[in-house]
Length: 132
Image (cartoon, rainbow, N blue to C red; front, side, top):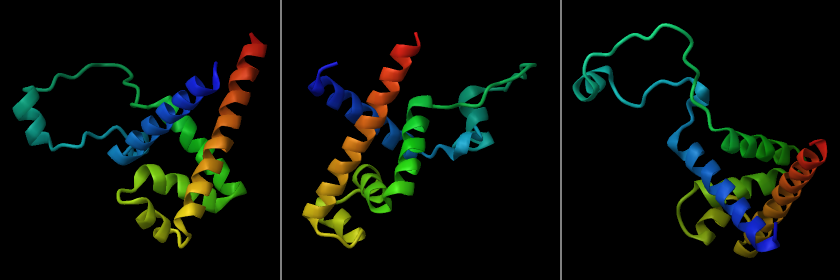
């Protein structure tokens, strides 16, 4: 994988993670975000299906979330900067002010977080290739 395509891959994974976080993952509880009345109106009479129904999950986004939590154990500010970058709205200066750092330091923390995640993901891919 070329460096440009890996950067694109990392950016895509981070955007999926942000979308998963912003939409409300509800920690896998699987409750619908609408009322029973609305579901009856739009879906009609619900039918019961016997058996196990797996809870919804998004494994790539959950993997990034686990890595961000691990990152927070090493450098809390770097993990907070990454969360602010992808989960907050507003300008760069607004997000930097939220962390009480300058905008140049904020960009530096986000770049460091990207490098940290890139290292973790590339090491994981390498390990999986060698296992096969």
